Image 1: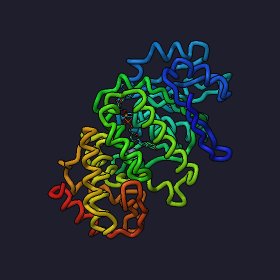
Image 2: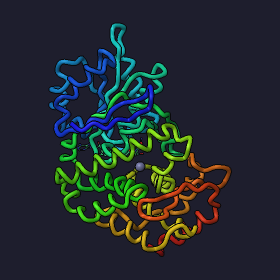
Image 3: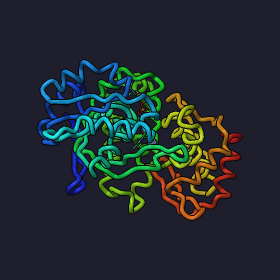
Image 4: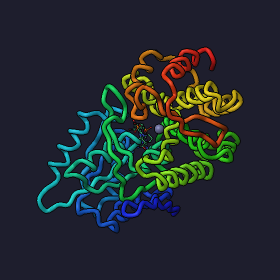
Length: 362
Ligand SMILES: NC(=O)c1ccc[n+]([C@@H]2O[C@H](COP(=O)([O-])OP(=O)(O)OC[C@H]3O[C@@H](n4cnc5c(N)ncnc54)[C@H](O)[C@@H]3O)[C@@H](O)[C@H]2O)c1
Ligand SMILES: [Zn+2]
């Protein structure tokens, strides 16, 4: 079993990566002494595909499963309160409950947030089931729900007690969902490693077809990069963690503007990274060549590169972004493949100009 340590003094935990780990998650969890009753949050699809395997894994551990809606609907205010009501019903006098988030990034985000606020914090673990959640969302303790005004606007930093990654889950994902996860893999390559970028370019076919050695390399590399960044800046106080938001200011605005329905997070990140790269060119920090390299890799991964959405609405929702400081934007700009920088005070004018010209450029 591969183990990646996240060293955060009293908030430290491990990411365990192993094929078919789901089979033994129930017994592993016992060793952590988190409580005596597991409340498993699973999205509808995960429940449908894995109900029997989950029951088998937790056969010797008292538990109950709460089924959440698929997709971003799991991260709404209504869904959060349903989860909390569900937990209250299960939280009996003789029980010490903890949460197991078993699903994509949406289940991890809302489950982690519910864990952080219920009785001012109960333990939780992550069992990520999408590629996006395995390489990104399940690690690092950012938890949140969306409001209609803005994505992830209500949230907390709250670390899980462990992350259990079973690449076997990926076999039941749709092709499109694999691609969505790969948008975040491209992000890691762009912000931190030109060698990993080359690996993605050379091996894109094997990665898309989930060849075990290739997909393992993707999971290990991304989880490793995220672990180091989170260790260096757990709560994003030093701007080190901010680079993980490359492409995300635009992506989150696009998701909110499309009411979390038309465009998925991975698709929005694909477009957001190209937008950020285009903005970087306008701000003079990179050239066209880097933008085309990113665009071509995103195309190889069958991700969108052309934005067909209402850019005015996107611009409006960008103003709610948490990274927006007194009318000027904090953005992550591209310098070279593998290197980005955080820049404060990008004027609104440059943002709107970039948005206007983006459609014609790409
Ligand atoms: N907290 C963080 O640091 C962080 C980082 C990146 C993204 N995110 C968040 O993650 C969310 C996106 O996550 P996502 O892309 O995993 O989407 P998702 O959670 O909506 O999952 C996508 C779909 O796949 C289904 N699914 C999940 N696992 C499956 C499996 N093994 N087989 C078949 N179907 C399965 C889900 O039910 C859902 O319908 C966004 O809300 C984003 O903001 C959070
Ligand atoms: Zn993301």
